[in-house]
Length: 80
Image (tube, rainbow, N blue to C red):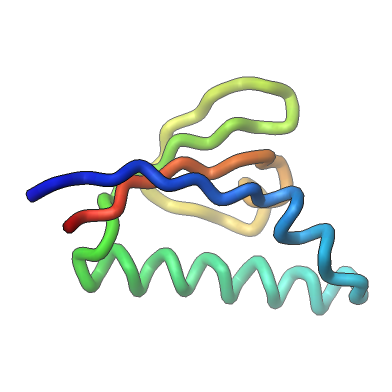
């Protein structure tokens, strides 16, 4: 199986929504559900590399709304 590395600019993605904090939380939850569905469908690997707003690099297997709030970029691998 081949892997293609992809990146999601979380800050840019979330900045396009001019909504309340509660609605923004729903957007983050929906984003998490998309990643879970993609993992369960074997479309992407089950590990993410996060570049946090503090410039730290963090590897995780599960995303949370708190993590997404602190993240600048999410790197993930698409399975082909």
